[in-house]
Image (cartoon, rainbow, N blue to C red; front, side, top):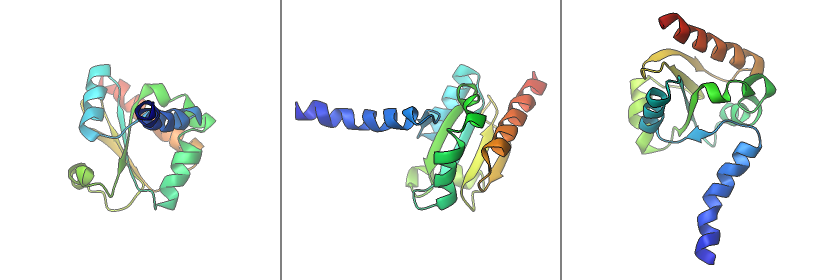
Length: 139
């Protein structure tokens, strides 16, 4: 019984995050890129940290906002902790020097733009719309 209760904890935390209206986040760079290719969706790679105030503001106020909600299913979302060793290579590859650093990838896994720093929900929604339009131009 205890094992079932403990096993349910991570799921409960994820469900709580989704219930707040945010997108579903993957936490593995390679899996996010793979999912983008498989589902033919662009990928949003967010480099963040628990101690980063602007990062947490984006996570709590921008990603779940009404302005951004319409984009949740149009992208694969990856939320990567900048302090985790597993994320060092993609951080180096994208030249991350400050966070939040948000890299936008096309369906081929290649960068089509980036944003460094926080923004308003409306400005972030405009950025996402631009990323989608760039992808349509390639077709």
